[in-house]
Length: 233
Image (spheres, rainbow, N blue to C red):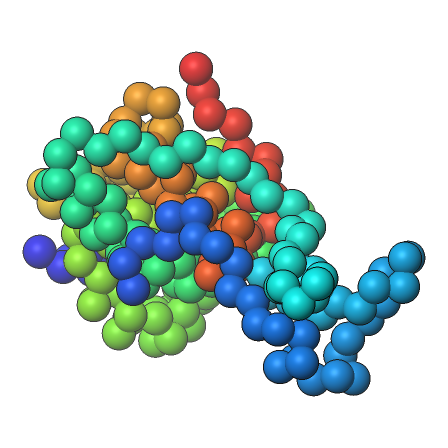
């Protein structure tokens, strides 16, 4: 079942194998542009890889990598091969959905900023106009999302905003709309009211592990405020 059929275009704005703790990709210094090399406080040459957030040195003929920051994320313990396959499956869905999530998150934050000083009537008119504009822009992408990708998208939005998809829809479209979206979401196995919690839910544990891994090695760009998330006990 396609995610578009149950999540609809109006929410978007309001709306490889796994890269689990891979080594940073690095080359010998002579393979980097020489004009890009820098010196540290001890006079040692290095190349700074902004994408991977790492300094790359060559010491005694060997390439040495120094990370700016490394978050150690314990990899989940797989019960069986099926469990492991599902982990890799979720990673593929995450990488497909993540760019769309970044756009939706920024749109949501921008809308909150813009409408924070508006009266209710003005806010409703503005949001209605914005829905029409963004529907044209993102309809094709949403139609291609599967139910699993929709689940990942909803979890990412909850992690970033602290609000479930149901709460965001209720906030921006009203309680009655939120009720019906929740009914449709359950019919497609997307629980719009459920909070993202890696301690309670296996699929959330997998997703959190994959997020940390992809952020660590630079395959995904962390969203502003990504470190603010705290797992509820």
